[in-house]
Length: 454
Image (cartoon, rainbow, N blue to C red; front, side, top):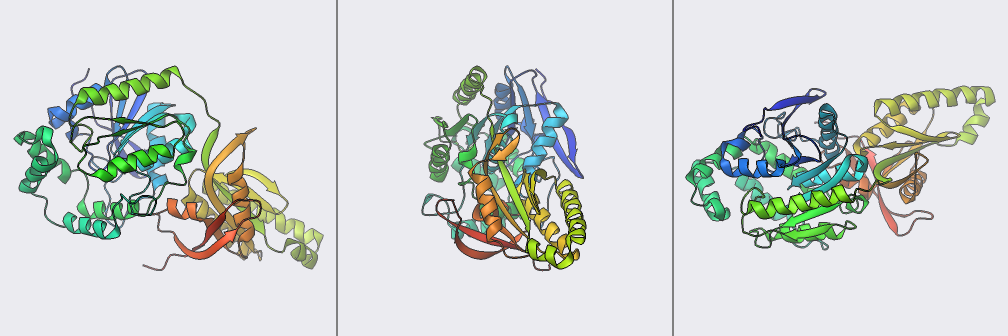
């Protein structure tokens, strides 16, 4: 096996994405390292190198620094990408390598990306292995073990202090017992943090992830999931958060690892590799094709079409509807939406990410205004059932009801959509709680609005 794999790059538009490949064949395991990540520096200390070689044993291991991290495109504090953009990078990377399906090992905030990917692309996901994973990072009555806003503000203040060799050595000595006396590791850890991401971006990224909440989405994951926890982990929220996450995913399992080290590459490698190996072997034995995916649904409808048709006459109205259809289809193509159905003067489309659906809906509203037409739009994200290659199920019904509740020239979204686009720059106004006809419970809806000028 190659001692040190070559760092390569692929591109998503103008953004470079760094990756390495170790081993060959199937199955494939994609490793997303999370809070600190630099695939080039991974090989500068034997502890990390041994851990990675063990992961690559008898499989193809792909290591990737997500955008903003390590050798991939770095980011400024004002440039924090939404989840769906980082998720799309994984599609670009897998396509570059000719990989149809992969299991994903993800830690920390990259677990958000992995969960979103698995729910959206089950046909490309064999399974998930998650460590230091949670559905959300901010305290709530349902997740009281998570940090409060005040604790995150305290962390921001800690980020603004200088990261020195002395601080790094103290961090290793206090928090990483298996390497506490390893001076070379402490020096590596100092450089590793320096070269993982800028501190300003780390603060901005943390702010995004504190606003991200996947509790409504993770039940849509229908691939095998293994959540790894260390009961002696110094941060207890990771243990409770991991168990809570597993409890929301049908069939997910939790496996305990020994030791008190916080990072997955430390401690007893044999126990960690054994857990990974057994899980992946089970997937190979019991591979199941799934027909349910996570999708964002968009419904649009012309307001007052009957009155408008009567006012302009049948011939003029048919021409106006044709211009409407042409414009909507062009915008769906621009924002990568897939037309599912057209019923009279309305459209039903699906998107792989909610931010793109919102921007498309707002563009449709603006374009129709120029044609002298008002439309309403509704957007919801959830699990859809693919029936004869068309989306169906409760998510579709909810999306249609959200659209029906929208006012003329209004883009209305569900709470789920709002929670998933943190960090995208999109702004919303609370439109209160609604009862949606034929849909259980009450739903809080939000109006997508123009962001204030910078």
